[in-house]
Picture 1: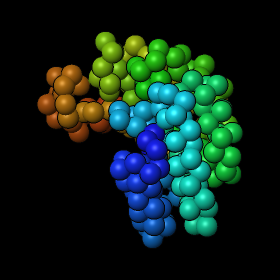
Picture 2: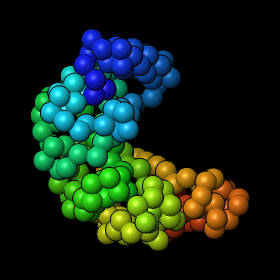
Picture 3: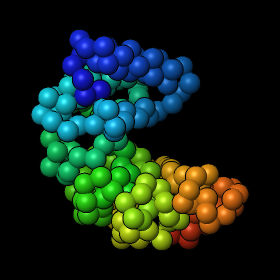
Length: 198
């Protein structure tokens, strides 16, 4: 997504966008996530412009099918608002994650969500500690999950909260070798925090 459109990786991103929108339309999937991590991270002005261009294309392709394109990234609130302005499509939204902003850039998760919540279409919930992704059960990490959960309860109008902890790998798997028991603990915690969940 962050590479020039006429580069090998840029062309691959465009092909993936077209395939994702086609598949989502055929399956009746209302939201397509477009991640910007690792090799596709938005870490320069050029990467920002390239990503905005591809997100704009994705939104235009998705619009006829009633599909929302959701960017998951680790931008600041200012950069997120700027990205939305650059893409400038009514079906563009943000996929918010409760750990990634703090983990990658040290941003205050709850404050960032307070700013960008009108753009948020779905939320990934996970927690972590010691600079490690998805390394703690909900509310047991260092990225302020409980404060962020309060902002989610105040602002989020979506239908889903998506659990994204990595229950099958260390360090979470050190708590219990059965990932399904760990998942059950997070589900119980999530239902206690967000009682409107079924």
